[in-house]
Length: 452
Ligand SMILES: [Zn+2]
Image (cartoon, rainbow, N blue to C red; front, top):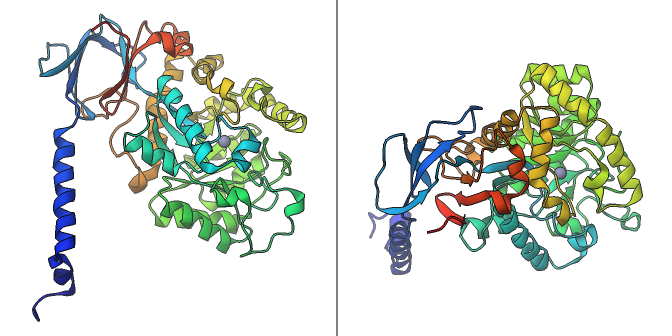
């Protein structure tokens, strides 16, 4: 006994041994239950990177990955899907989504039981996947449990790159408290939105550090702060800059120590430039940026995760004051895309649908609306391989290591079989129920309209 280390003593305990044996058994039975191989025959591939289709090809999917792509016949035990010359493309990615905040109204999100709002979000997650969006980057909201349920196979939904709670300042974007909740005492009672993990108020570098670390502890793949005012919050004019540079830097250090990065909500030049000075790697929105700021973003290789807001419908779930702010944002949409193109800023596509289930139905249509500034193939590349490149910034905190957004040997098998050629007719994306014949995520088929 004396020769045993403490660790060996622990592992000799029968209960622990039993647990280990059981978990090993669970692992091997999980392997045995992995999805059978699927062969897509006779498909033309949009690979997510090139604006042209491949020659008629065959694609073998085994387990959760693309094992082989060949113009020669592929035979394998498993399911055969005859593509009939249709287009196989990567699953779509939404780089700015709020899985927990699409369906509820603001009041429901803040007041109702979080169990109910999570179930609402689960229903929406299934709809999101059925629109062909196989991955979302969640830019705020308590989505950790939903992500877990999806990953465990309990709920059909997209892969979620969660930020957890948005971190804001007193009065900043994401502070949904009432004036009657003031004054705030540091270390005092948490507000409802903080208790449910929707957003956290932090008014010093130390507080920011705690809140950022709490999100990382829960599994955040990136940390989200609001560096300026926003549309949906009652007390933050659009023009305001919120966090100080040391506050932003505290979050950047916490994220960097954890192997990942910070993204900030920022519309204005000041809020964007301050974010960049603090080490932020991705700017969300940016609609009110100017020429100098765009040049700085390009020089520093900062990502722009922006949205094609073309009308106030995006704020349809909100009040008149918020819709006014939305009009200001919309007025900058043409400019932000023009600047992004002028300076070659790394640009991601997202929709940022909030509190508006009807708008979520237009998720694909919003992607199509990018053709106001981009060729259809460029828009499709942005929503697949480019968005996937942004997801890769999560580094060691990437919850889904592997290649997303591409159809290539070894990539994760998130695939759509389209009834038509979306490069020639991108509007096919607007009607996913009709035009996405097969939807696969991680090698598993979630939808198949082809006759068996
Ligand atoms: Zn957002």
